[in-house]
Image 1 (tube, rainbow, N blue to C red):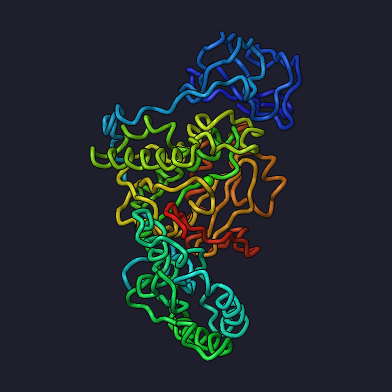
Image 2 (image 1 turned 180 degrees about the horizontal axis):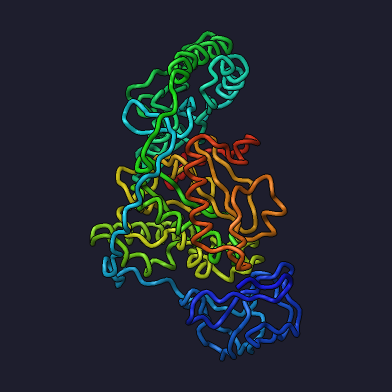
Length: 504
Ligand code: CA
């Protein structure tokens, strides 16, 4: 049933919830009476929680059917549950989690869907035909940026089947403790980025000549331009451009061919979340994730600090004991990583999240993990590892948008689906990013940045299922070459390595 325009609307997600969130733009004033008879005792901003019952001091506040916190003082029915009234619960203990106890039955296969992609020499596919130029160290970034500007201006117009030339610049390579155990993360990330499927296997590396991370360690088989061997700047640029052109010729000879969806690796992420993210955009993404899994694709969900407080809902879905243990291993590693910095997962939530109605990381996590849909979790990747399996995988990454994006690229992600409530113009150079908004007002504000709006789910004008199918079809179109808004504007964020090891 469609609510009338302007009619007060509050959304309760789960039957057990004792709170709902106010849906109307601008919030609702004191005295507002909802169809259910609930009357607001004070102004409640959009996306923020209202108590559906009288809550005693210390009583559990329940959203998504889970405890998101405890009332710090009595809260009357119809009152605004402002963030400071919610005491955060402790995270679920990691040593007593149910593992593989509720493995969902495999979803029925979904057949007959294909996309138009490029077939790579190693059998993988690409959804974009991009020349990527890898680097072994940050020292070369300035020279490479100049070379890439000239390649784009002077060479790329001659090779119209190649979409772009991307410098894989990063901050690693020297001044770092290469032998520290955790250096494995940035090193394998750089290695796996070099062989990203959207780069067509045409690897080349620009190095300096004295760095710690040898170019041969980035790629043992690729050609290398070593700047210290060149007689001056002009010769450096000439060498990079000549090596790039050989690869442009080969990449330009490729044509899109029909590929099964099972060749795709789709990454899921959220950023700038609000209280609607878990109601509209993330459930629709979860529905699309199930469709992709049913079609045989690989789907990655990530963001450890946004999974940690919902881990008790995920370990039962692990396909077996080993995968469940791997999930717990990644949570433990991250707990310890945060503890070394004398913080915990509550450091995740941003002022914008809170303004958008998310009281704490527990509430944010419950909304975030909905993206994973309902299929069994088939595998776990440590940060920077490459996916080699089909189905739903947990790729452990920080929640930071650029770091998560970079690590999902290292995992071999062809295309990313990114949900946002507050709005961010985020993009990646190596893979298209489909941005999905959680509410109508963001789509209206950013018509030329948001690719798909899930806000209709909030107002009742659309269903999770309908938006999920729309997203699934959009993923196929974008994989086949349709440009996202970020691609049309040339928007992308920098590759940002995750380096938990010491810098020297
Ligand atoms: Ca994020």
